[in-house]
Image (cartoon, rainbow, N blue to C red; front, side, top):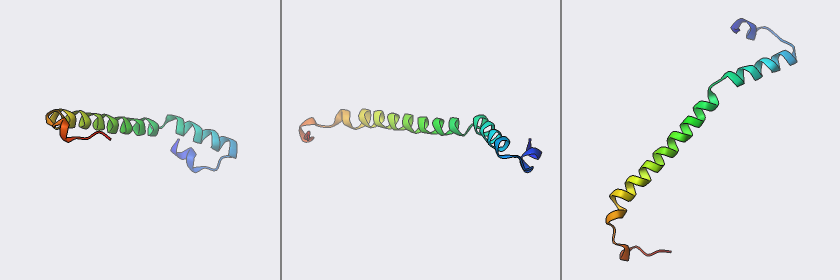
Length: 65
């Protein structure tokens, strides 16, 4: 496959080869996994902040806008 990439193909064959390469790559999976990990981290931090800080806060000193 690597040898074939170096050769000059006609436009249609080159396009189909690029489509196959992009379909078989894990780029989208990695990107979605990274986004999911960041969202889960944010949820965990929000929960921890609420549990550690906001549970003991005095509600009379915190005005609601």
